[in-house]
Image (cartoon, rainbow over all chains, first blue to last red; front, side, top):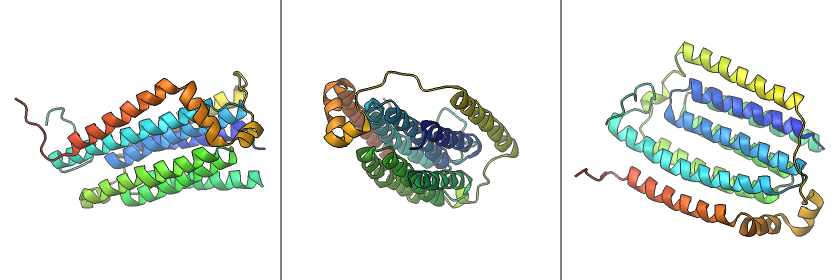
Length: 100
Length: 173
């Protein structure tokens, strides 16, 4: 039986890698993937603690997070596509105007 | 045996996540992210959340990453493939911030202990009743309102993606 702290540390590492990806990459798609990675790290925390506390509420929260992530990906990728049509790039350093 | 699988999956997940954020080509990043997702599904199996592991593979590796790969192939990313990872100060600043953040979380995990109400679903009971039945029962009784709200959220997501992705944006009056 693995102690729950080990799972939490793996999840913390994944979350930190996701933060690093958002802060240092300039490609909007990779930034988006890093956000997915962070959501998954939180999901892992939820499942590990649900197991530790003999409860299934954590697993149900993971379902809702998955739903939100799916909706977020659909809308976010559509935004990236329309940005690319408008600007011809997805480098977030070059996308610095609010108006089209 | 379980601890062997735990370390196996941790190495896979962490290594492919690091490769994911460091690789210049977004197609490779997406493929390494899929490996990470499979590793996380392995963790769910180790935590005896079998239904969740299957749903995770279907939704993330099956739907979300296919969407990502479609978008990468729709956009012509020759320039971006050669784009450097970031300006040096961005890399430095990002590394310092994320290491600080990681050390804070690890400190909390190290010093803290798990408190909270112990629920009435130990793993043996979940295995006896079946993972799907327990989760479905909770979802349609205690969490009925968030469940319905999630369906509206998905509808809004579909409509928003179609409106934003369509070529002819509605002209302002």
